[in-house]
Length: 167
Ligand code: PNS
Image 1 (cartoon, helix red, strand yellow):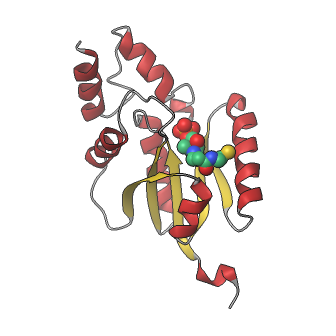
Image 2: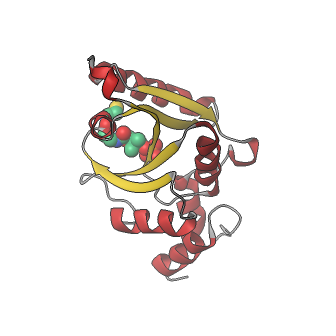
């Protein structure tokens, strides 16, 4: 039996910081579920980063924003993404690609991951044009200055942003 016989070929990992999850992420999750049998949304816990929302909050907001269904799981991980993928026996890391601006860093990350574990493939889906301008970072920025985010994030996230920012 080769190493790759152990893979769960129907499974994809959709990793990210999700600080917070946006409608763009959600669209990609549903598109991912059309392609793969099962999807794990994997929230990265990085002790050296200071996110707006804690890992627990980010995970809870995603769980609340998504329907409960047997082919969808929300989990969190610490350490290397490819190690997490290997623990889950996943062969595929799914990432969204917005504009050209994403390409450089995604290319680097995919190649680094490939170097660490050549068996794990990164697959990209183009973000829908409706959301190509949208990122967690600009959602945080707009919300911080009191701008409207209701069309950009799920309702529970808009509420959590208001509570966090006291607005
Ligand atoms: O939503 P983001 O911030 O673009 O997601 C980036 C993420 C979490 C996928 C990436 O930083 C990651 O995989 N972190 C885990 C640590 C790791 O494996 N680093 C090696 C990749 S160069």
